[in-house]
Amino acid sequence: RGRLIVAALLSALGAMLGLVPLAAMVHMVQVAMGQGDGAASIWPLLGVALVCLFAAALLILAGEVLAHWADNQLTHGLRRAAVQRLGQVPLGWFSSRSSGEVKQVLQDDIATLHSLSAHFYTSVARAGGAMLVAVAYLLAQDWRMALIALLPFPGYVWFLRRALRSSGAQMGVFAGHMGRIQSAAVAFVA
Image 1 (tube, rainbow, N blue to C red):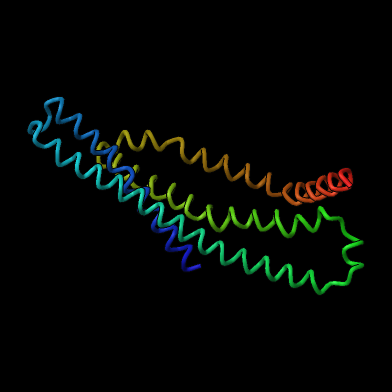
Image 2: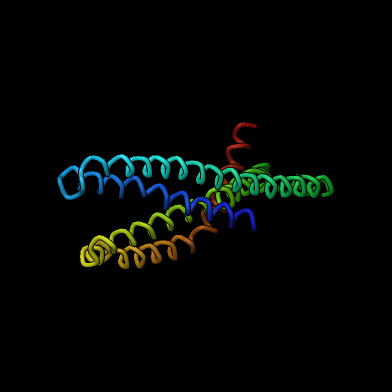
């Protein structure tokens, strides 16, 4: 858990720094259009933009590596425990289950867990960090335009909640059907 929290924080900070070059470009254009103190002020902005761009890439990479390291330890332990448990069950247990069901538990469920532990938290952190910096930048530029730009966001959240609630009810049925499809495919090949 601690590694995933640090990975998420690194990814969020990387996403925040990744937006600095965009803000620097806006200010470089303002300088070029005559709203600044000349071409001499473009070079420091370019330097800051490049440093932030590379720092963002390194922080996101570090977050992803750390998240995958934590995931590797988790899924490795789960796979070992599952194999040890399957080594202790009576042989009749296997004959009452299809190979698709066993594959579902040993491969597919752990692959889903990989998506959760290695990718979900860093992806959410990157999205949250980018949104936080973007909203702060918009508010700093013009709070009225920022409010207009953010107006559709509550509707999106409402729609997303409804979609997730309706799909969550069907997820168990979907997993059961996938297990039957895999069992049928294995039986067909056999």
